[in-house]
Image (cartoon, rainbow over all chains, first blue to last red; front, side, top):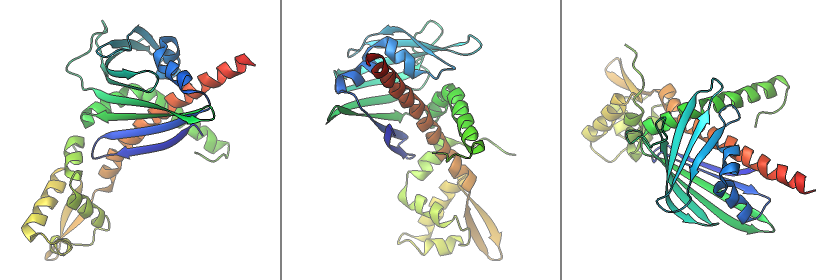
Length: 166
Length: 111
């Protein structure tokens, strides 16, 4: 099981999730620092992400869009707050307009990533997301909806096959 | 008229420990305002005020039962708040699964 812990706090609108991988810290860092790798996991298969700008430095930005099944494009933007390669990264994730510029009227999610060496070639990655409002959370989720559907389908398949569901 | 739940109102209502405790006790929907107030050291009026905040947020409802006003938790509303965070968890679980796949794929190639 890759995911080792999840903590959700409804009052402070925070979700934290931790995962462990059987690779070194530098390798986990590359998942974030190499835009081609980031593209392969940020969006679900039905909404793959394309990173067009990727500057991992304080004040830098990451511009990306996700392309839906109908060719529809959804733009997103990160404003980098802090980078400590290969230990930690924090940024503000928000929606962007069709030109890729951050939409100031849209809420932001404050995301912090911590990467720790567990020894024996194992690494723990902890991600903490803080929403500024419930509206922000709903908007984030509207974008990830497709993925939720896919997951639900997988669970229904498991039930039909008589397998335990997570 | 049925209106969409106001999540911001709900979250701010739940930000208080006494109000969370009231919501928990009112799940059974058996106690009236005065019975609920007996659980706390604060005044009856203060408890009444907390219940009013919860009622405005749609988290509890009051109904008249004889001479008592019985307070019940709106369980579906509470579940809706919870579901938003659950959904966000699924989003990140999906991402982490894809990270793990990416790392495993590379290991295959190296062999």
